Length: 120
Image (cartoon, rainbow, N blue to C red; front, top):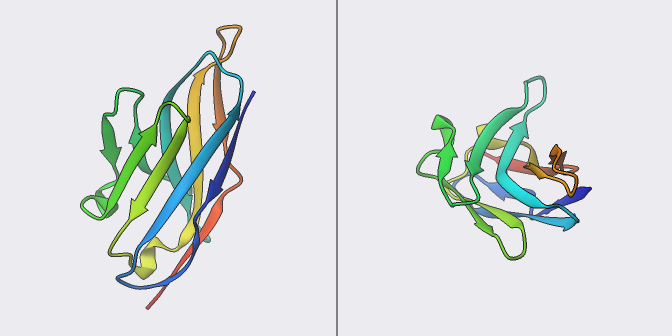
């Protein structure tokens, strides 16, 4: 079982920056894709950015050029650098990791979420 713990959220003014971290713990055979999602009040959870184990990345159009996802495969940690933040980026941000457990079964784990609030 893999557990994920996010950190780094907070309150920031528009135009500011935040860096989110997601540390994983537990035992897994392998961890593949890691991603950040977000959910604003009254809206569905949406994919923000994804990074494969090989380092390929994918971003939502709304954050391209402003957010950067990265990972440390040795520590199984994923980061989200968020620059030029806008009020519409306000949401709870969730970390997600997918992989194989020791039995070879697929798993997908979620963190508890961290609040990001951008004031105008």
